[in-house]
Image (tube, rainbow, N blue to C red; front, side, top):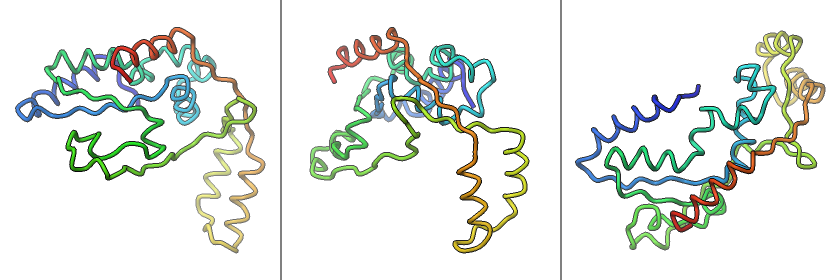
Length: 193
């Protein structure tokens, strides 16, 4: 479910009221929107309104992608008196290149690397994102398959494997508008990473 700008701003304000007396360290992991937004679109495609499913550019400029407008997010945090805001790159996090000391600001943890790895990777073929389409047949099939046990050697496993092979797929080229890329690059320079 998406939140619009006013919902997110309100949540930040509530967090500020709760945590302001503790002067919290805010950690924001920056992911290049050119990678993140297509991945996010692919992940939530079936939950999107049909007009956004059909128009990736409209999606990339919608409130669904507000989390990747780091300038806006930083402004919201600063307007609520959060000042210890720290930025790290997503690619460094999933490559296990960040230490607990870097994230917390505590030097005695600089030799403890955070190991997260990358999960939920969408399928990409020849620079096109693979989006599995749900059809009426699939929806009905899923209702039936739900009740077939997924045993390693039983019929349930066979049915699930067969279904994954025949499931219709759509290939889409998802490119983030150059303006969004430039905004991210400018922000990275501004915060020094």
